[in-house]
Length: 230
Image (spheres, rainbow, N blue to C red):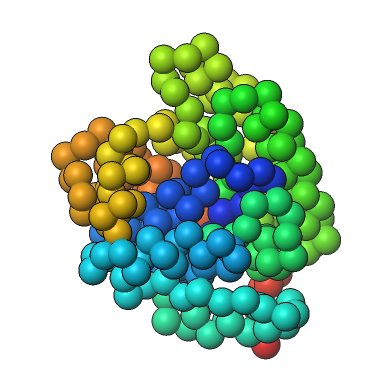
């Protein structure tokens, strides 16, 4: 059964879909079988995949669910044929985002550099910790990603340090890059569109960090989350 990695954000505009798409491609480039599940009603990831013929075009499943059982049944189905299932959720704490967090091995929380983004990040961390406690396991792990910030701004330079104080793992940063927007317009990931770009190297670093994190040994034996969902 594949690992589940969900992208969750309390507010929009922090690069959640960009992270999901490009992270998936970089993890697949290391030989993993990766699929993406788009549960955001805006369907940004699904639209992105439909605009090109590259990596995303055959790897995105778009779905809406009337219940948590329907969501979990679909996750189990997709897990059977994947090493990694990346779930792109709606902004805010919509039901589908909660469902995703409950079954995830890792929840990635992107955060911009504004004070409002940091306040929203605190809310998201609290939610994930509550779900972890309710699960009675070490899962979901939490990864904080500095995202869509301007490197030359004071707020941008301070973002990683601010996130490090929140008590969870801080992952490699993904700042705002023109290449990321241009790749999306082409229906491609940045690794396909601009393989020699700084943006691509940053996603390679992020993918490496995510792989390492989800494969770390637990200090405690976690219960099988999905076993009880079948």
